[in-house]
Amino acid sequence: MVDVTTVLGLMAGALTTTAFLPQLLKTWKTRSADDVSLGMLLTLCTGIILWIVYGVSIRDLPLIVANAVTFILAFTILCLKVRYRSQRVS
Image: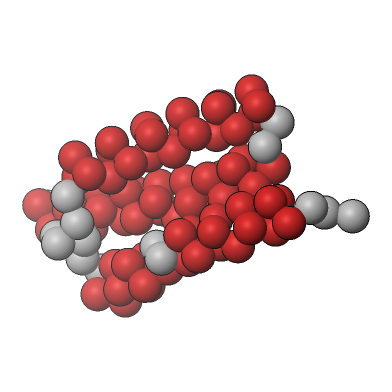
C-alpha cells in the first residue's frame, strides 16, 4: 500500500508537470517558441536533471517520476524552440 505522503507527492508532481502541456501544445500548434526564453529552458532542464539525480539518491519515486516527465516536456519545448528558430533563419 502506498502511504499518504507518496500520494501527495505524486499529486503535486502531476499538477506541476501538466503545467507544461499548454505551452508545449501552443508551441507545437503555432510553430513558434519566441515567447519562451532559451536561457530559462536551459536552466530549467539542468535543474530538472539535478532533481532527478537527487530523487534517485534518496530513492523518492514521486520526485523521480514527476521530474522525468517534466524534463521530457521541457526538453521537447527546448528542441522545438531551437528547431523553429533555425527554420526561420534559413
